[in-house]
Structures are given as structure tokens and as C-alpha cells.
Length: 328
Image (cartoon, rainbow, N blue to C red):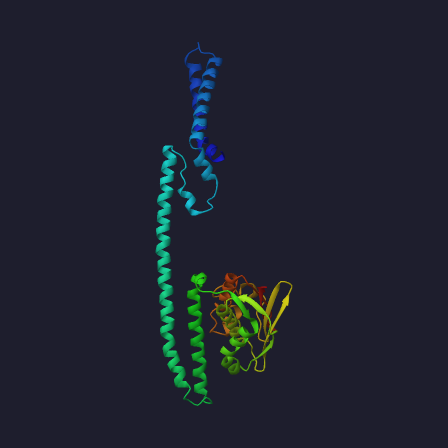
């Protein structure tokens, strides 16, 4: 109703102005016309205007009601508004706009799918030369500083390829996960084993306090990916040798909690609220140039898709704690 009145307000104002001018002309042009005659004519004209406005409102009532409510779904714009010419024209316009939108959305989705397929093929293609270099490196003297540096670069390449692969799979997450009961201790031990060389190279040691019978409902592959990202940060930002990364898990009410606490440089207070934002590296990024700012972002996205909660606490110079909360 408000939209209808706003649209018809100029017509009403011009009509009233017209009645005033015509009535004034009647009074001045012919002395036989009295004020009551002019008033009667004006009233009659207003009644006719009111009848027209009522007719127009009910003729387009469905259209105005639709325009007053926001769309809940895109295909609601395809609903017929009315049989009036204006309503039919608006319906045709909305249908054409929806078709253009759907066509553009389909083209964009196809491009994204093609891009994800290319990334997957590229990552698998790059794994072959990395594996060849890794095998060649095994024949070298492991005490050679050059060999140690090469091994670190290979590990970095592997982590970068893994991140690219999992990032490309994130949009198709619903097609690439399997929820089951996963022994939490086994998942943590496997992730530590996968990152064993990284721990040794940085002189950082894992310490575990996880009951063997703790089971969490999750996807084993994606859980190991998240643990690997958190471990990578924990080891990377542990500034001194001899530091520890502590893994602790326990049941609390209807939740299972897993904490990963390092003794590294910590996160600045002003950066703590943004660490889950994509590409945000904060103060650490100025000192550790290999930081991508994507690790914790991916951890949060995967946790959200799996229905888990991820939290972070940190004190600069004291270390960082990342906490996963699983429903039991």
C-alpha cells in the first residue's frame, strides 16, 4: 500500500492542483457560478479519482505486494504478478533477468570447475618431479648442509602443493568427505609422523596427552590436513630450539576438545582477530616471508564444513594455542 501511494502521489497532487485552477477559473470567468457549484464539481472529480485509484490498486495489488517483500529465493521472481499490462511487463522483465543470471552463473561455475580440474592435474603432475628429487636426495650425505637445505625446500614444495590441492577441493567439499569415527590419538600420531622431519629440523619436540580411547566423528583425511596446517605453524613460529608442541585432548560434557599449544613467538593482540582471514599474515608475515596467510583460513573453513569449532588463543612471546571442539 505504501509503495502504491508513493507512486500515485504526483498524480494526486497534480489532480488537486488542476481542480483548484479549474475551480478558480470557473468562479472568475462566470459570475453565475457560485462557490458551492465549484466545490460540488471538485468533489465529484475527487470521487472519480478515488474510484480510479481503487481500481488501479486492486488491479496491481499482487504486484505491489510482491515488490514490498524481499525475495526469499531467486526463482520466486518467476511467479506471475497479475494479468494487467504493467504487471505482465514486469513479470517478463524479471523472467528475462533471471534467465540471464542463471546463464551467467552456469558459465562462472563451469570456469571454476575447469580451474579446479586444472589445479588438480597440475598438482599431481608436479608431484612426480618432486618425488624424483626426493629419491635423488636420499643418495646424498644427509650431514651435508646443502642436502639439508634441499630437503627443507622439498618439504616446502610438498606443503605448497598439498595446500593448493586442498584449496581447489574446498568448493567441492560435499563430494569429497566421509564422516566416521576416528581415533584422535591415531590421527595426531600420523600427522606428527608426516611432519617428523620438520620437527627434527627445527629442533621442536611433540608432547602428547591424548587418551587412546577418544573417538571423534569427523573425516580422517580432512582432519589430518587441519592438524598438519596447525603443526606447520606451531613448529615454524617456535623461535628457539628445545621448544615443545603439546597436544592435549579430553572429553567435556558433550564435546571432545583437542588443544595444540606451542611455545613460540605468539601472535600480536591486534592481529589475533584476523588470523582466520584469507591471506592475512600480520606481524609474522614481516619476519617469515614464506607465510601465505591461508593455513588458518583453510582450517576454519574445513572445520565449519565438518561442523567443528576452532578457537585460538595467544600471548605474544608466550606461544599460541589452537583448540578444536568436536561434537560427541
